Image 1: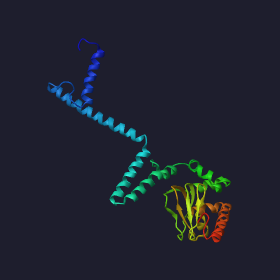
Image 2: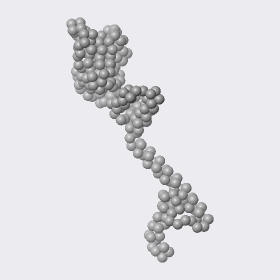
Image 3: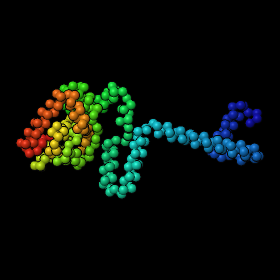
Image 4: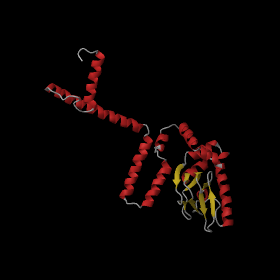
Length: 269
C-alpha cells in the first residue's frame, strides 16, 4: 500500500480498525510484536465498550418510542407473577388478562398525575374531549349548563366491567352512580324482570338522593365502559346547581313510581 493513493490507504486502514473493533478480535493477522499485542488488546477493549454503548443507546431509543406500552408490559408481568405466586385458577387468570386488555388496551398512563400537572383550563379541555362521546349520547347533558357538565365530568372515574359482573347488588348501601359510555347492562328486580340499559343511560342515582339501600341489582351483559360518580362528589356538584338536582329528583321519582307499579325498576337503583 505504500505506493497506492491515500484513498486506498485510508480505506484499508479503516477496514483493519473496524475488523479489530467490531469483530472484537485481532483482525486478519495475529499481532507479532509486544507493541502490536498491547495495541490490539486496547483496540478490542475500546471496540467492546463502543459496541455495548451502541446496543444500550439503541435499546433505550426503541423503548422510548412507546414508553406507555412498555409500562403496560412491565405492569402485566407483575400481575402474572402475582397470579402465579397465589396459584390462581386458570379461568380467573383468563378473566384478569381480558380485563387488562379491555381496561388499558395495551397502553398504560399515569393519567391522574398528568392531569394534575396541567392548569385547570387545560385539564377541563382534555376531560371534555375525552368524554365527548359520553356527553353526545347522554340526554341529561344535552341541554344542561356547560359549567355543570364540566363540573360533573371532572369528578367522574373510569371503570370497566366484564360480562356477568354485578355492578350493583340489591340491598347494599349506594356510594356511586354510573354513566354508561359503552355496553349493555341488565336491571334485575325481585320479580325476575329484566330491563336493559345501553350507551347514554345512567343508573344508581336514586340511592344517592334517598340515602337508602339499592332497590335492584345491575349486571353487565357485555364489556361495559362506565364512568362512576361518588356520592360526595354527586352532592357537591348538585349543591352548586340546584336545578340539576331537581332534574335528577324528577327522574328518580318517576322511576320509583314505576318500581311500585311493576315491582321492579325500569332502569336504575
